[in-house]
Structures are given as C-alpha cells and as structure tokens.
Amino acid sequence: MNARHAWRLVPGPLLLSRILWLAVVVAVVRTSVPVQPLLTGIRTSLLHWDAPHYIDIARAGYPPLLDYHDAFLPGYPLLIRAAALVTRDYVVAAWLVSFVSEAFALWYIARLVMAERDRDAAAFSVWLIALAPAALFFTALYTESTFVAAAAASLYHARRGDAQASAVAGVAACAVRLTGLALLPALLVETVSRTGARPSRALLWPLLLPVPMLLYCAYMQVHAHDALAYFDAQRLPSFNHFVAFPWNGFAATWHAMFSPFGGDNLSIFAREVAFGLLGLVLCLAMWASSRIPPSLSLYTTLAWLLTASLTFWRSEARYDLALFPSVLLVSDLTARIRSARPAMLAASGALMCAGVAIFAQGRWLG
Picture (spheres, rainbow, N blue to C red):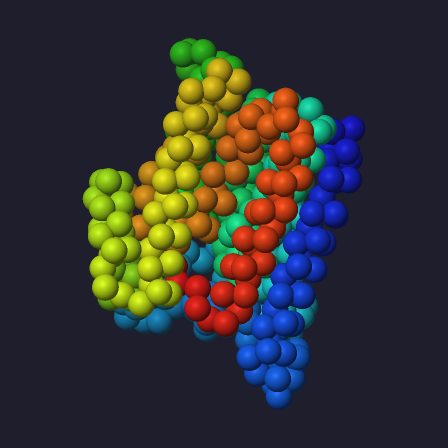
C-alpha cells in the first residue's frame, strides 16, 4: 500500500520540473541562437561541463593513461551504455537514464518520508526535491538522479530492516559516486540498532559497499597501471581537488568571492559559500532534532563532509541534493505553518529556472 501511494506522488513534481526545464531551455535557445534548430539547441544545452565526459566514457571507455576521465566512476556511464543499446544515441540514453532515475529517486524519498511521517509530509518532500534550486542536475546528464535514487533506496530499506536490499542499493550508489560511502556507517548504525551488539550476519551486508571502488581500482591497475587513478585524477589541473578541513575550503572560497574578479565569478563563489553553509546548517539541525533517526543524520553529515572537505568549495549546490534526508527536517519545521510551503516551493522553483538558464548558456561553473 505504501509503495502504491508513494508512486502517486511522483508524476506531478517529475513532469512539472521537466516542463519548466524545457520551457527555460527553449527560451534560451530561441534568444541566444535563433537560427539554430530547436532540437539541436536543446541537445547542446544538455552537454555542458561533466556531461560530455560521461558520454565519452560510455562510448569509448577510459583512456589507457592517467586522464581527467578517471575521476568519474563507471556506474553512470555503464547505465548510459546499456540504454544506448536501445536508443542508439548516447545523449538520448543518458537523458533517459536520468529521467527514470529521478522517478525512482522521488518514489523512494516519498516512501522514506511517508514511513517516517505521513502522506502530506511525503508529498511536500517530493515537490521540494523536484523543484530544488539545483534540481536541474536531475535532468542534465549528471549522476545526481542516479545517485539519489540508489542512496534513498538504501536508506529506506535500512530503516525497514532489510539489510540485504539496503546493501545492494548502497553498492549501486557507490558505483556512481564516492559519496555513497557515507551510507556505510549509517547502515551499520541502523543494523546495530536492530540487532544489538551481538554478532549478526546482517552486519556483513553493509561491508559490501566499498566493493565498487575496489573493483574500479583493480581495473585501473590493469588498464592504466595506476590503482589510485581515481584519486590521482582528482588532483589534475582539471579538478585540482585536494583534501582539507571544511573550514579551509570555506576560507578559500570566501576569499575568492571578495577578490577583484568579474560579476559572474562573484556570484559563482557566493553560490558555493551559500549552499556549502546551507548544507552545514541542515546537518547541525538534524542532529538537534529529536525526531530525525541517527542513521539519517549520520549519512547526511558524512555526505556533506565528503564534498566540503576540499581546499576549495565547488559544486556545493548540486552536492546538496545528496542531503535529501533533510527534507524530514524541513517538513517538520513547516508542519505548523503549511502556508509557508507553497511560497517555499515557488521560490525554490524560481531559483531552479534561473539555474537552468545559466546552465543552458554554459555559464554554470561547479
């Protein structure tokens, strides 16, 4: 019954977010390059920044020498390649994977919230995720929709006490993004809370989550003679990612925001600071709430730390999508002032549309 009711909450937010995305992209294409065929412009708007790299990997695999492509895990490209067997077009395949993944992501978030709260909270949470400021990355050819679908499924099944299903979904999340490793401690906490400290076979299932990364390291050792290619690629000039304390990344980004750059760069750095701090506030508030399960607070905090513990904050807006359990907190805070919810959704949707316009023009950095 819960699953069927949850599915009914998905089509409206899913379709509206896609319609808004398409409307904004069409407006951008018609305004910026009016002589360009519309379908070509829409297709081009999908292929910015990381998206072409996923398509490259899906089409031709990884290069034989260390390359920035090595910084992208193979889970999402493998799904694209599988879908391309049907579509015969890698861009269409990637769009289809993202669409189906977002549907499952919203479904599992609805099931998670419905099980923890009620149907009204679940409905609001699904709309909040679908119209989040960075929800454009659910449509763009990025890993966000696939990762959130797998992570939400993992946490949902963990909360239901199904360690096996939770681990399988967690493995899928780890095959897509390194952030999936934030699920491991959360699943262990959830399992221990149900089985106690006594030895249990259920405790072994979460230990499968690092397997995708270990397999990728083994493959890169054979393919490129560098088992740590994923981490080495992160340090290449294309990314320049180095591990640091979150406050160091914040300080560097804050300093860049006030450096004598142009207006676009100022807004970019301000966005990173704002969404990075938003993620921190959500994590702290979840721990402060007595109604949020510790496993969900732990996952959310670790997911934030994995993306904020760098020498420079980058892509914080879309990384905040991985903090989806925080919808429970937002739902609780707005439960007594339901009138605030439509205004919140409208403001969030407007920010999403603005982000779509920026991304479609190729001006979104991070």
